[in-house]
Image 1: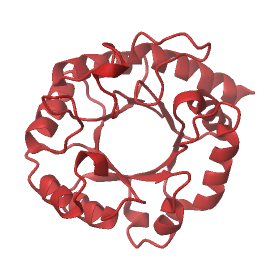
Image 2 (image 1 turned 180 degrees about the vertical axis):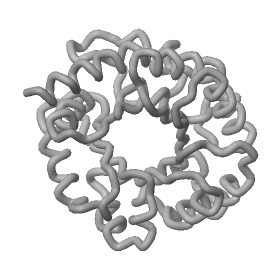
Image 3 (image 1 turned 90 degrees about the vertical axis):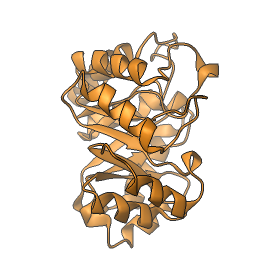
Length: 241
């Protein structure tokens, strides 16, 4: 599986190509699905372009994307979108349109309460385990671990030279990951080396403007669809090597 990560916490300062409105996110996601993405991860935005968990923004974003595609749609629950854990849970309980899944960063305060709220509502959970945090240890000890949809092994090392090593260390820390499927991905300079590692290991991965703004040769990407097209090519080549 190659998931497209449509926009992330990026904003207008990252360039006009990063989709910010529900319509732009839907168009970008649809083009990425057309070229081979089979799952979507998106960050709904407030009118001023900040990540938000508000029911209005989540509904508008999910409905816009679903009007154009028939693949699963997931959203973030990152603490930066709602710093107070209790408020984060209340936001989720107030959603009127439910995504297929939502990512939960296991190292963040209140993560397990967020997981419980999502599962109560029938929303799948992507367990975000970041390198450089205690997320893997927390996840290993969690009673919720066997119930997540998948594990997002998220390599935060932005260096092309060391990201693969960091990825292998993170996977070792995850161990059996409660037997759940693992999606491995990197970011910035580490995005492409980690994607190729995922291909060699036969793990799911993701690519998109959240994780990188550039192609493997360093040229600026023009769209999520271009990143997915190149990602599938790089992933396939790595898997055959």
